[in-house]
Image (cartoon, rainbow, N blue to C red; front, side, top):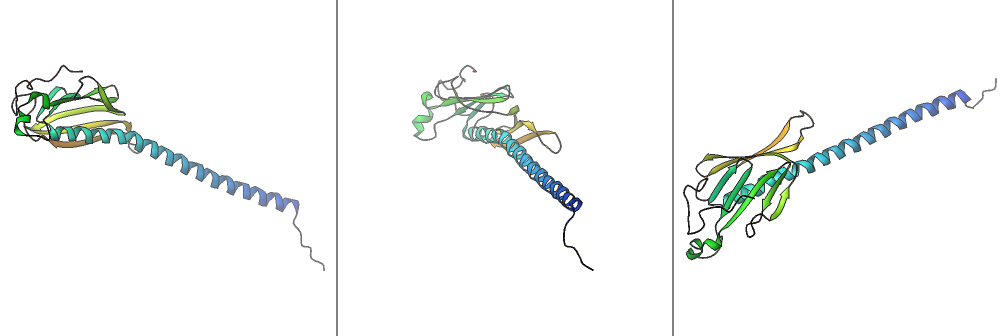
Length: 186
């Protein structure tokens, strides 16, 4: 008896079909991996700005000797001179007022040397709350516009900052002549 070594047309079609299914499955896994990776990257970028805003605001509060809470989302901060002499502490021109104000989903930071001139801003901020925990300790909460992909809940960044001196709303602290009142709110 003679054996034949060949492949029938049916076997070729069946093997080709199985190969195509395997290739499609591998392509689907790869496309899904790329899509999920891009979503994670986009989410981390959206949440980076609110986290950076929290750090920026906390640094300003640490330097401050006065905080004027116009509202929980509109804050003026007085920053004394960092370098200089004792005479500089008594010179009203050496102090600077900065302001943070939430407009929609943008936290705006206004210039200390030219009030109401925006220096920078931080996007993707849904909510800002600054509240006094103690005489010179503040709790800062910033809520991102992006929700947690797992729970679909809002993402909150919370921190505390301690002023080096003074209290809220200009009640005490260093008060050189002419520097007691903040400029008009922007």
